[in-house]
Length: 423
Image (cartoon, rainbow, N blue to C red; front, side, top):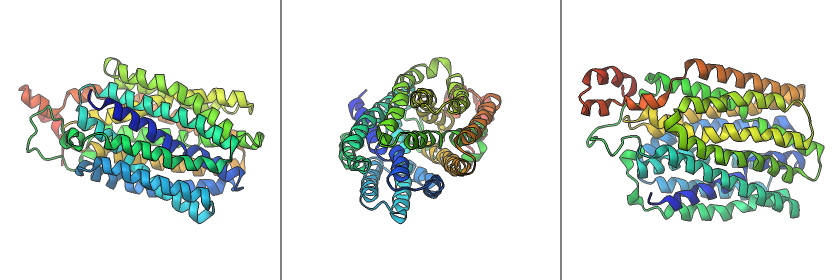
């Protein structure tokens, strides 16, 4: 595929940019700035609320704009400014503002990269390319975890944030090396350029509530991230409190452990998503999360906690590949691919924000083990809903009404069209 290398390096370097901020911020605020868990949770929740509000509008904008590369570059600028602000003035107003701006910028990265990928490829070979995107993202996370661990050990935890401008430049160069003309913008929003769709208008926004599988999937995603979002920060806090002076290297060990598993899992999920179907692979991610939450309560030993963190690699590796692929299945032919990503990301953000707040309060009131068990119970609920209610979306994509119209299956198209492209 043309532009394979730029997409590879974009995903790799963008992971480095984001990885320099997220996991290390909580530990930095807890150990060097002496914030309590509840205060950190409030900041994360506030930023999360702002982020989830903008996900939908960002999706609409990415569907409509021909400046998809510009969305990535602008977001990189915001992350750089936020990282430098936190490093130089880590007080409550600064951190709150910076995290909020990071949430706004972060809302555009996933949809923009998925849209660029879809705009170059269309639906053909999309599964394997999404797997490759995710694999390079995880490889970037491994690299930044190692680099950040070394920087935090040799210099200070705040020095980690100064890595962001370096990798932002690399990510910007990568995305700008993809010519604007290489991106088919109709295809990038879910109107596959291989179909005779010239002059066809996108479906109305009501498709987001009339597509039942999309509603089910969004619910499962929200529950999953409610259970998952707070787990790594809580583990990082436990390790930081038990092993003073080793906070950054231990957090890096947790990240590297998970990311080393995510990389092959992402490649496997991308390679087998068409042959095995989306649901059986996705089920692995949902099933392993409650197990992971329970296992965290067995011991506070650093080797045990890092070992359990390996399981995060299975769930996150699958999620990163299959979420944009499932949405491409469901939204094919509607022209609302990026809007659907924004809508699902909004619910994902609600779940993640509640996770940080609820877990932080439980830790303050009852301790870490009750917090992990609560998250494990929510994860089990997500798994049950997914097993019972979620259909196989690869079959849904095959029922795309415009393809059926071209093959003469007009009766079946009349049944499917109101579900997929109403409004």
